[in-house]
Image 1 (cartoon, rainbow, N blue to C red):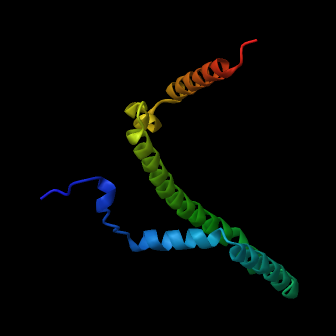
Image 2 (spheres, rainbow, N blue to C red; image 1 turned 45 degrees about the vertical axis):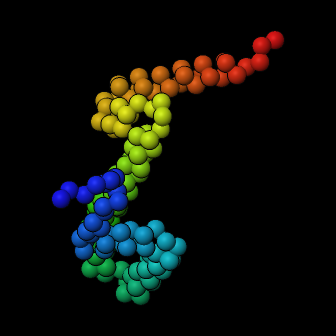
Image 3 (cartoon, rainbow, N blue to C red; image 1 turned 90 degrees about the vertical axis):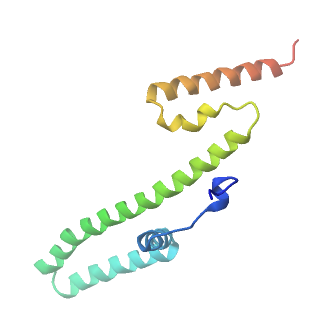
Length: 139
């Protein structure tokens, strides 16, 4: 038997281990503690270089390791951003769907071309100007 009601009432909450790990790591990477850890690690790295007279291995670890870590963080953060953006879009779609007078066509506006988005934005600006003009007290 198919579930009834709104789809959000039947969330399965199936998360992969990667998704849980990515969300936790993303949350942690944006914290003050992470900033402090990175700053401390950087200072320790410079101190280690100074103490060992900046050997070639010291330089190679940074020049090879940091781009790899940076790329991994970009992929991780993009994954988290995509999920959050999609959830936000669905929430907005729900508000449009239940708003009287709103057009349901706006629920798929993220699929529009840049020219279409510009046209829609100009239409909203024109509507806003009309509302502002109608509220202006006549002299």
